[in-house]
Length: 300
Ligand SMILES: Nc1nc2c(ncn2[C@@H]2O[C@H](COP(=O)(O)OP(=O)(O)OP(=O)(O)O)[C@@H](O)[C@H]2O)c(=O)[nH]1
Ligand SMILES: [Mg+2]
Image (cartoon, rainbow, N blue to C red; front, side, top):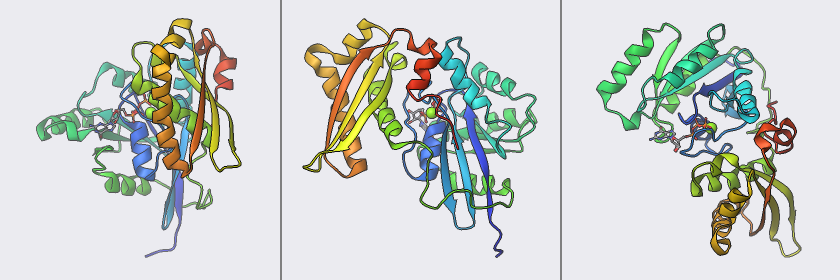
């Protein structure tokens, strides 16, 4: 036993949908990032601090790296890429069920010149048979890009202790950067907006999920103890607004109900959730709107 304290940064990067945010939540044992089966769920860097007895691992979840010319998407990818040289270790994530595909190749190309040590995390091993996993590990090993390769299932929490030890072994001795009660840099109101957006991602289809932004405008406790949250859902077109409201307001009611249930559990209080739907044409191509909606919110 030694008394040395280790601390440092590890970013979780990869193409969209491989399970980066799921891993962040499972390692922290609480939800700080929203997740969905749709690609491009995460839009900004989200930092989470994992407090261990003799160490502090600062994890940075990032948006999925992908190709797109939209301003929002370019900003998302820039946020991911910006972590490469700022961290002690890059956790590059693949999804075992998809194997190594062109989109993963694009991710590796984006870090060609990067000197930071990289570990390959193969996620979703619960979805494949052993021989498929072994052949993928073998294929990736031949690239000679990674210090190590580790198979996990973030969702089933398989291999997470091994992953924690592995990350620790790459961190330097360092100070306790953050107070023990600090788990994320994500402001509460931003996370609440994200939870509402997560319900929209689950309930809507086609271009609607991607076109939506949610902003919590106000949150206050009423005299009777009920917490009132006012949030605006922004869509890009009238047709999307119509879908979000639904027949007789049914879709909006559904979104509201699902979000309220989760928020009430989180806050341990009754919530009155007031949702508004507005159109902000082409907001995904306007840096100002993207900033206003909080998607450029930066890490520590
Ligand atoms: N079966 C299985 N599914 C998983 C696992 N990890 C994540 N998922 C699922 O994969 C989907 C995507 O997960 P996310 O955590 O949102 O993925 P992401 O990489 O953060 O995606 P982006 O934010 O879009 O880049 C969700 O439906 C998760 O439940 C896993 O280990 N096994
Ligand atoms: Mg994510």
